[in-house]
Amino acid sequence: MEVRTTRFGVIEIAEDRVITFPSGMLGFPEHRRYCLLQPGDDACFFWLQCLDDPDLAFVVTDPTLFIQEYSVPIRAEQMSSLGLGSLDDAQVFVIVNKVDDELTGNLQGPLVINTIDRVAEQMVLAEKRWTTRHPLIKVGATSGAATASA
Image (cartoon, rainbow, N blue to C red; front, side, top):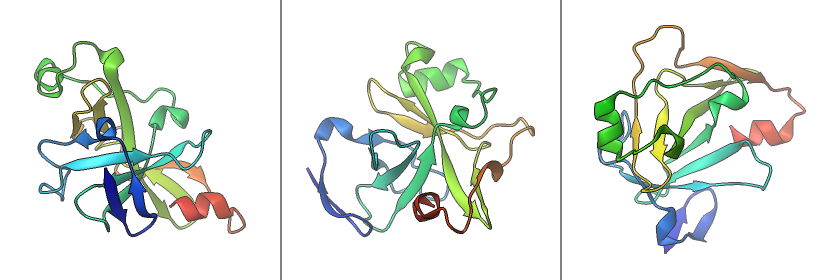
């Protein structure tokens, strides 16, 4: 399928790459269909591009690349709503923002994706250990690749 984006122009993605958020994401309840774009084979940051709004895209990453002890407790009803038979079928991402010279991750609102059925949900964690602007990595003024990704 052809997808219009403001950042990448028109791109072609396979139908089996569509990720559906049945309830949308926080602040974007009407936007439900997305795809994950990987800028390179060894990239640790990705674009979560909305398929219905070319202007809407989020930089996301696997938080465990930066914080090994991070985990998302998924309750039985969340497993059911995501159609997860096993936690092994779940992939967790967090939305990344650039704040001054740091990339931060929304560790309090992780995105949990069923990698088999490509159904996703943004969770809201009650645990106060994590924040919506949790520091992930510092970026320098000369670090063009990291700055451009944010």
